[in-house]
Image (cartoon, rainbow, N blue to C red; front, side, top):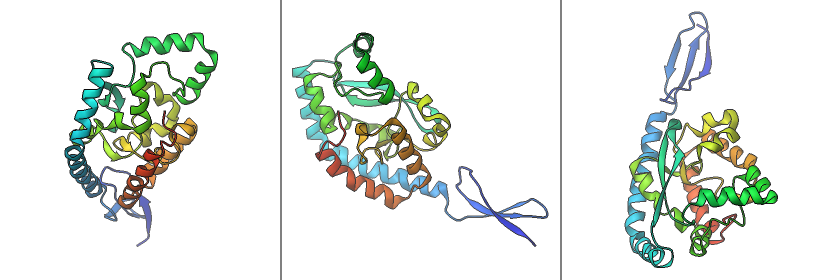
Length: 237
């Protein structure tokens, strides 16, 4: 009986053989995507919970410093695109001025070079919205520590594409489907590959590569490489 190997892109993440005469797919599990997802999720919750407890004094100290130096609100909840394209409130320490959107629009309106940079990367090296202490928060990535709560809640993962806003979906083109297959990550290939020093095209390519070549060991490697990248503030602004 003739058979041919086929890829099955179901949520179970399985592959199998197809009976060439009947067209019936005879499924044989190679690697259960469901098991892989549960393992990744369990790792995320365990590590994030431990990290949150360990870093609680730092988070409390940073909250106190922000309250004194720039006032409330201490945190922001910014809508980002998550697993399956669903929106979720991504948590961060506030590193921008109040009414940051109005400040950005005025700056881009009056500054052609900044407007071109924004259109190319969706980032600004000299961002007028960033507060003095916010520069430290972003440079050190401390502003992202509250996202440990997002991970515990299931909105994010320790490793994955960095969460994007809906305006960035168009930049992914057809590859947005790859992005939506996984939870956004606290860190990822983009984080250890230069971050904002790379082009947006490179960022998309790195996200697609991560999703399509995922393995647990690659996640561990990315986490290990994140530490020196953060310490060097590689591409962070």
